[in-house]
Length: 138
Image (cartoon, rainbow, N blue to C red; front, top):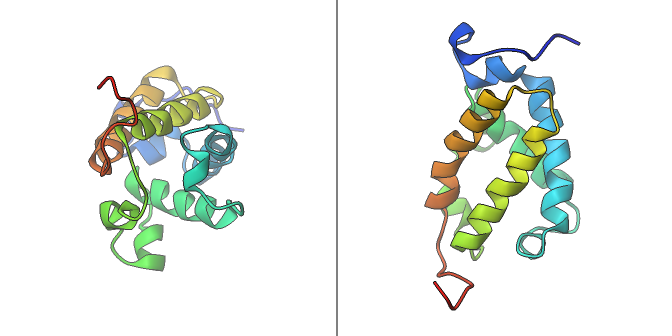
């Protein structure tokens, strides 16, 4: 397996820097068990998670600078619109990012690239918020 001791300055995209398709597949495979076990996130996802995992693989590939697999299959991502049917709270956005950060930490992606990936995903995660906080203290 090629070394993942990479940094973005040597690559045109995050997708290339983290190792491409195989790494995206690994991230998705590590991520969804965490989502399914999370009390805030699990209720939002179907029992058969495999179609969701495949869409996430296609989306992350494209979003991180790889081939436009999601658009080729489904058209423009329109991710906010696609997430509107689900109650996305600030807590759920943060939980999603925490699960993703944990999944990334279980790969051999360097820590700076892990942080960059989470930063890149934070914008959309917070943009999808469409429901007020679950917490009465906020």
